[in-house]
Image (cartoon, rainbow, N blue to C red; front, side, top):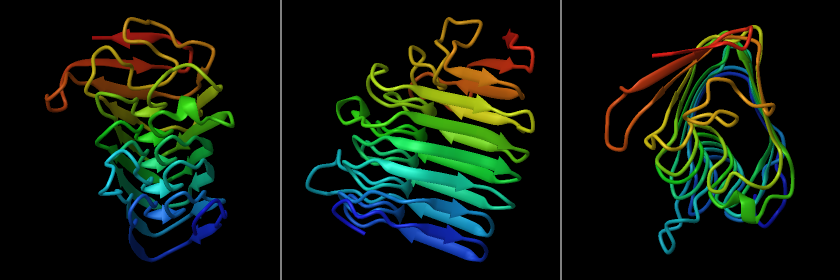
Length: 239
């Protein structure tokens, strides 16, 4: 799948290990290729985005689009166990470098781990998405399983990378949500869209009906630092 042709992918069972070629997604679009609808409803999936060795910023998503293109709808549900990895400005789950993801839904009992090591969000957009954004982005977290998202110093764990201006980002944590663990390396950048590091309440872009947890790390530290939990009534507990 390359040069803008969308490809629909459905995985229902089994074990899938996918690695993207240069600039391509592990599961989704090739370099400069968008992704159509991706539905993973069962099985064990491990997907890693590809890196363009000639320019280390043009990476593909682990699951989603290749570099420079938006991703379509991504649905992780059922009893799926998903591990996604990215670098080079791409999201682990979502869009490649400069891309946006139209819709990411994590539902039912899916267990999800997403790791972005450089500039892209773990779950959400690629780096510099504000220069290439053509769509709004919606992220729904409503799985009874655990979501673990590792961002980096330049991007949120769940949400956007790069500039916070541009198109609308809406994140909903549903009533059935299990724990959501979000890590990032920059104390001046929130790990979750809709919350700033000094904010005791989420803004209107974030709707929390369930229960979410996150840790925030300083650069170079292991998983330790300030913790915050949000509850169904919108209150926050800080330690």
